[in-house]
Length: 179
Image (cartoon, rainbow, N blue to C red; front, top):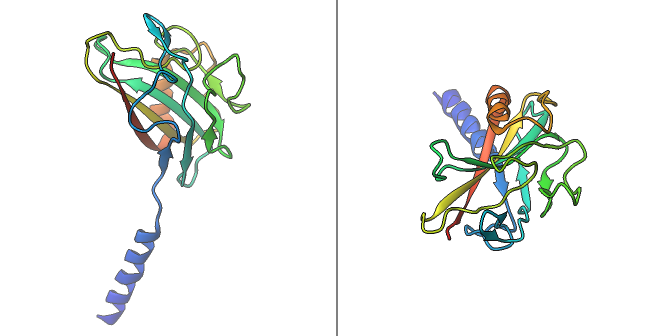
């Protein structure tokens, strides 16, 4: 009986020391700001992607992907604001404004594909006026492959399918915005 208790105690101790895969941002305090807001479609923000960092990736992670999704968009299927994949497994942060293709701040291996705005790179929040608060879900995907085999012209649905096929674990944070 003492052996069983000892084994159980060791097992529980190891479980308590296990760390969860997490995503954080120094720029997102729950609410989006004009800095992150899209510039277009009637919005006048800076369209600056927030800083994002992640930790404690699961064993077997070969690359990462980041997505930003608005499940509240009045489209019937939500709205993809940012899709980045093929981020090397030794990277654990995207700096602020990494979503700007022109600034070239994303990690070298990363591919920023099409969004539902029709362009590549980050497209900030821009919900319809009076539509209420929208959730913007940032998710980091730990992937079991180093490359998805897609390119910058891939649409969000196709990338999403490949993420579904290859995700080991994911972590998310939510930002809120309304106009």
